Image (tube, rainbow, N blue to C red; front, side):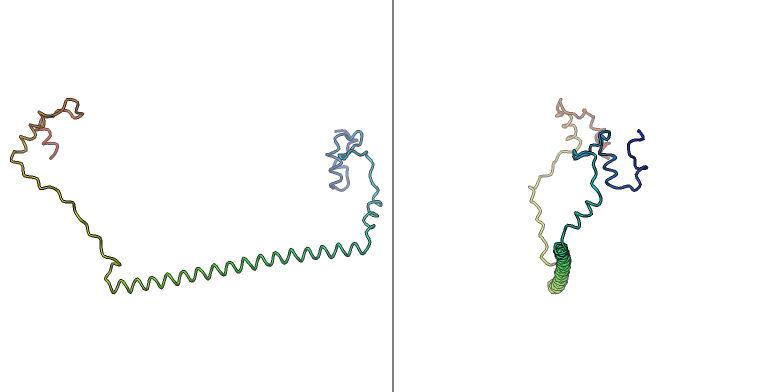
Length: 171
């Protein structure tokens, strides 16, 4: 860059004003600033006087308002902490009550179990379905295997194996 442009190295103290002047004034050849005014600067004395324009009464009012706002924020934070503490204590009490109730119920169930046996209820009765009684076949197993070979369907996925190989595979 040219030497006529200000840089951070040439500015004595780095400040927001200097950074704004360096980086936001793209059209620095004309001295234009971002708000559209010329390159004129306010005098530091004028800025200092504008702060002194407030009367001591206005300063004390602002001070009181600020202290009241600060006190209100502190109170809100304290109340929120106390509420969360109370809520935690309530949850702790409820948890303890639940544990006591659970322990009491376990004691009652153990007394009931001692009185009525080891189970709390009667066991479920398993009912087996009744199948029809099949008559025993009088034919031998070899004759049934031979009849199966004769009956085998042509579209069956199983190959037609002789009965001897079937018997060997079952053993």
